[in-house]
Length: 327
Image 1 (cartoon, rainbow, N blue to C red):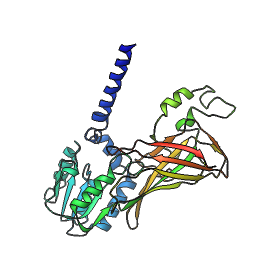
Image 2: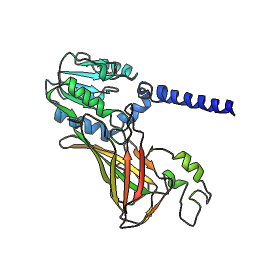
Image 3: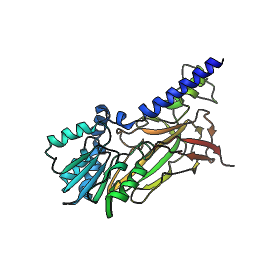
Image 4: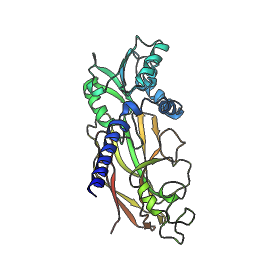
């Protein structure tokens, strides 16, 4: 028994080490050409950023690009008339960015810095900052808030411009037989489940024991309530990651709760928006999914209360949440 316990503890420690030092190392994850291919082929994303940069960057500006990736936004800034761009990218994809800078004859106007932006010192202040480090719920996976706050303070001139300017995040309670826990479990019904009339709750509870990401766009689902605004993030002034909140959801139709879908709606600049709502055409972002394996039933006219805590550490959210019926 002691040997088994020690073995389990060692295995847990190994998993924790692997997750912390391998899976969460952005230098490994973000270096994949396939990851960047999806982003580059996301026309809505690329067109929106090009439009915002053309509207924001003025001829002669100095620009800093945080998390430059292959350098696309830096290239857009040069095309918009930037005098110089500091492209900061810490992952191995910087090797490709260097080749693309050379191939496009931008070496005299783009300085590639292969380092975490918090360790960088620039030789001059910048007129504009641009970053596309948005995650599925805006701030939940790439430490965009703290990174932008640090860069804004140290890199920008007074009154410097930031792209994106702000973002709103939304959550919506839903049920669906097509994705998420609803594929395996349908509690409080005549059937054991949607999965061949078999009880697969033990697997579903393990499989959906924590938050994940889903592609809900185009998939049938029932909204139990209108989407609720959870956080407003103004990248021109925010300095700290969001904390705990209480979100009320007035129930508009009867149904079971399979979980919550989350997304962002970003204002890149005046007149240019970008988001990953499941009601928009599909892009490379998925939606945040907070599962509810207990699948409680709600009725029209009730109010559902969601107690939500992002628990952000090392730039990554570790969501904890509780759902109750308002008395």
